[in-house]
Amino acid sequence: MSLFSSSISLRKGISITDEEFVQLRDFIYEKSGIFVDQKRKYLFESRFRKRLQELGLNSFGDYHKFLKFDSSRKEEMIRLFEMITTNETSFYRDTKQLEAFTDKVLSPLVADIRKQGKKDLNIWSAGCSSGEEPYTLAILLFELLGMDAARWNIRINANDISMAMINKAREGVYNDYAMKTTPEAIKKKYFINEAGGLRIKPEVAKLVDFRLMNLNDPLALKRIPRSHIVFCRNVIIYFDEDMKKRVINAFYDNLMPGGYLLLGHSESLHKITKAFKPEFHPGTIAYKKE
Image 1: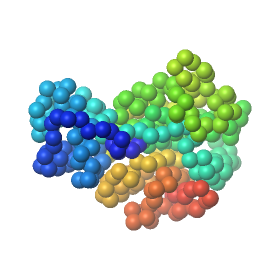
Image 2: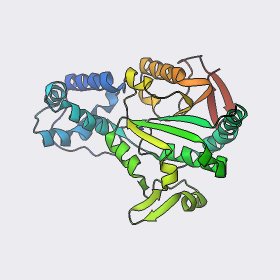
Image 3: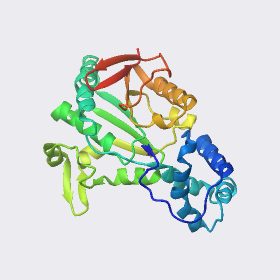
C-alpha cells in the first residue's frame, strides 16, 4: 500500500485551505492511522476534487462535515480509504526477500511444525492490496510442500483498508503489469489464461481469506487468528511513531512463540520495539518472536 500518487495531475476547481487540510488530515489519521504530511496538501486537492463535485459540495470543509454527520457517511468512508491509498504491487515482488524468506524462515518453520506432528500453518498478510502478496505466499507454500500441500491445513488471512482492493483480490484476475516479476514457469503452473488476463487457480485461491480491515481498529486486529508468520510490507511507513508502535504490538500479540514478522525493505523496527529478535539474512530481515 502506498499513500497517494505523485503522478496525479491537478484539476482546476475547489482549493483546500490550510485549516481544511488540517481538519481532513486529522480525521483521516483518527480513522485509519495514516498521517499525511503538509507537503502533500496539493495531492489532497487533486485526489478529492472530483469526489466533492460528484457529491455537489462546495468546499473541503463541507466534505469534512459530510464524513462526520451525513447519513451515508459509512459508505463514504469506504470511498475515502480508496482515495487516500494507491496500491503498487505485483506477484513475486522483491525476489531476493522472498527467496530468503522461503529458505531461512518458511522451510525451517514447516520442518519444525512437522516434527511436532502437526500440519497447521497460519499466515497474516496485513495491507494485502489487490492480493498479489498473499497469493504469492500461497504459491510459495505449494512449491515448498509439493503433493503434501493438500494434507496441510493452511490459512492465509489477507486484509486491506480498501474494499475495491479486496474485491479485486477475491476476483483473482491479473494483467501483465501485476505479473511483471513472476517467473514464466509459475504463470503456467498456477494461473489460467482468460480474456481479461490470468486467473489464479482455485486450489491456490482457496488458501486465502480476504477481509476488509482497518489496522487502526484494535478489536479487528484481535479477531485475526494466531499466526506463525505476519507479512506487512510497505505499510507502516505511512504511520506516525505512535501508530507504528500500536500496530507492531498487535502483530507481536498475534504471533505464536517462534513466529516471524516480515516488513518491507524501507521499513524496520528500529526505535519502535525491542520485543523481536532480528535475524539478518541476505535480502531481508526477519523479526522473530521468542
